[in-house]
Structures are given as structure tokens and as C-alpha cells.
Image 1 (cartoon, rainbow, N blue to C red):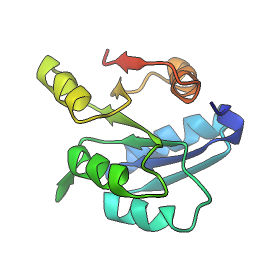
Image 2 (cartoon, one colour):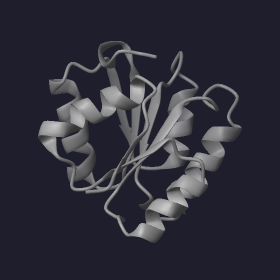
Image 3 (tube, rainbow, N blue to C red):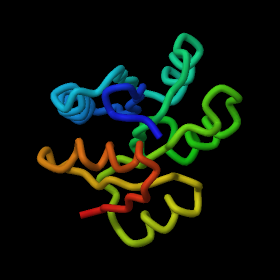
Image 4 (tube, rainbow, N blue to C red):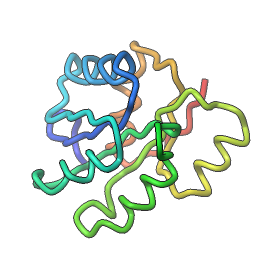
Length: 135
């Protein structure tokens, strides 16, 4: 289990305001290496240049692909197949949460993110704890 300060985190989010908020909050919390990409394809290209990725924070609905597509590609990638993958999404209906679980995500954080809680949520995930907070 990694500490936030030592972790490598990749945010996959197409909305500039959302990924900037996540990126800034993680940096303010003292996160190690945080990268943001707007698609799964861009994120997986980035993976090749990184020594490892501890956590992916993935929006579920992106133009041209979904978080469900992305987690499938992450789980097939030999370098990051065991990385934590958490949905970070505004889709917070019961059916969405159930589908995220069934797809093999390691957790769920609902948007809008709560700035006062976000750093602790990420620490909890990195510590190997379960996190399913949609509200």
C-alpha cells in the first residue's frame, strides 16, 4: 500500500474543470506524481513512460468511450493490470454503482467531489481499503 506522497495517479477525465479540480486538490494534499489525460488512449500511452501507476481515477462517460471500456484495457495491460481503478463520476444512480462494481472497479467517488474529503478518499484507496461513496 502506497502513501499519497509516493503514489503515481492518473486521472482520465474529458472535462477540463473536473480534471483541474482533481489535479489541484491532489497536489494540495501532497500527492506525488499526478497526471491528467482526456481519454483512455492518451492515458495508456502515458503508462508506457511511467515506472508504475498506483491509481487510475476514471470518469465513466467520455466522448467515444466509457470508463467500462477503459477498465477493460487497463486490466489487460501487463504493466498496470493490478493498479487500483476507481470511478470518479457524476453518474450516481444505484444502477450505475452496481454496474461499476460488476465491471471490476476498485471503488467509486461521486461528483461533484468534496474538496474537504477528496484527499482522504484517495488515501483510503491507496491504503487498500474499500471506498464506495456516491454522495
